[in-house]
Image (cartoon, rainbow, N blue to C red; front, side):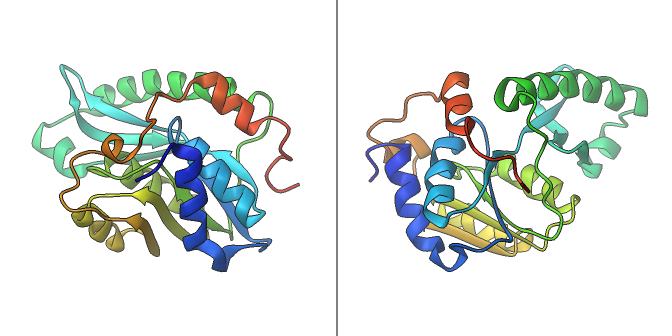
Amino acid sequence: MFRDRREAGHRLAAKLGRYAARTDVLVLGLPRGGVPVAAEVADALVAPLDVFLVRKLGVPGHEELAMGAIASGGVRVLNDDVVQQLRLTDRVIDGVTAAEQRELERRERVYRGDRPPPDPRGKIVILVDDGLATGATMRAAVLAVRRLGPERVVVAVPVGAHETCREFADVADEVVCAAEPDPFLAVGYWYEDFGQTTDDEVRELLAGRAPVGS
């Protein structure tokens, strides 16, 4: 369906034309694979681009089970059902949060350098990834960015599972899945080139762009 993430971003941008050349739009890519897609969207819309980092908070000993997530801007979202069911203490939650916060801050430095983090307050935030399978990371990103006071949150991906795209209607103001193939199989199935995006590529895509809000 797509040659690579750049082509996917170009085609996704065509679905977002109503947001072009507006001063209140901010495009945030989810590292790492979402950033090349987001860069194409931002360029097409003449909008600022930045990254929005999300780190899952895994239950100790069962790290694949998320008890919450943290995100850029000092936001933490907890899954109250998991916390209560497993009777997780504040000490456990705070310990995992501290470790993941250090990793998030490390990645922030790697990707952004001394650029200030984005301020979504009062803006139309377009959250971009290279696809939606289960949508767990994107859901955490939406919940986190909402706490930072945006005017509107738009989830935008080139390809996604139909059921997942529909499920986001309850957390995002708008969901743009450019393609919803059935059967979906996996995000990478719809790309000819789905090679891993590197940290250097993310830095390069962000380099030379004006700081958000300037």
